[in-house]
Amino acid sequence: MKTKSLVLLICLSSSCANLPTLSKIESCSFPMDKNYPGGLVNYYLKSNDSDLKNKLQMGNLKFTICRDDDFNANILVPIPLTYSKNKIEVILNNELIDSIGIENKFYRESRIQIQNKDFVNPPSSMQERIEREYLQGLTAKNTLSSSDLKQTKMVIPVIGITSSEFGVRRFINGKPRNRHIGLDIAANEGEPIRTPLDGKVILIGNFFYKGNVVYLDHGNGLVSSYSHMSKEAVVMNQSLIAGEVLGYVGSTGRVTGPHLHWEVYFLGIPINPEIFVN
Ligand SMILES: [Zn+2]
Image 1: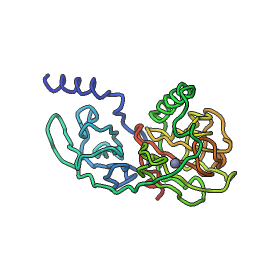
Image 2: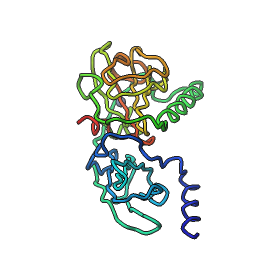
Image 3: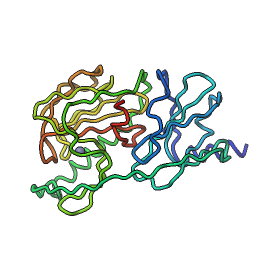
Image 4: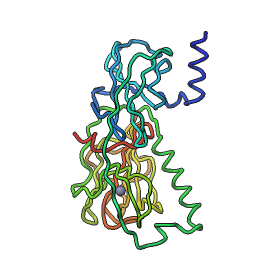
């Protein structure tokens, strides 16, 4: 009785809607040994408890459960870039059963100059638009569909040069800004951008910061986005197969030159796209 009320309490405080169980995944081995901020913990637990998701806590982080069979569970935990602890406490039925070490990962600083003052400090007339687009992005990246995730290995969406890695600490005109939560690939204007993994278009827009942007839902909490495109090549709700062209490299939104800004989210948490590319 005491356990039940505690689980209910946990559910109310951290939203049980965030604790899905992956369905029909080909292999639970996807991203392994990426135990650092911006990575993804893949923790193995021998358990056949069908209610495991409600009895388990991974610190206070969001997680999901992947099962290859009824007796084994892989607990997948995206680690936010801002996570500052050196471990995750695994709690089962209110009992501490294990502790997972989290490595400290170095992310470099990047300092850029942007001449267009409106992009550095947007005018107040733009605030409503920026807020609206932020909320659209927030909804898209937290999409949790039950569609089958056959596999998670991604192909690079565009051939080019990595111009800014995931996680860098950015300074614009000398002032600290949000961390870089995507991977920048510099390429020629008009270069085709290909879908890295089967998915469905869940948002298309022309955003103040992101320029022409497309969000894809790959199922089971895995979402990706493609920013600064010259134009998109897809429509809302379109289903795409890995390799299909979704748009073209451009320099729309807040940019210093033509490139693709590629984001990957798991359960709404931005993680390094590179960990999915072999
Ligand atoms: Zn970027």
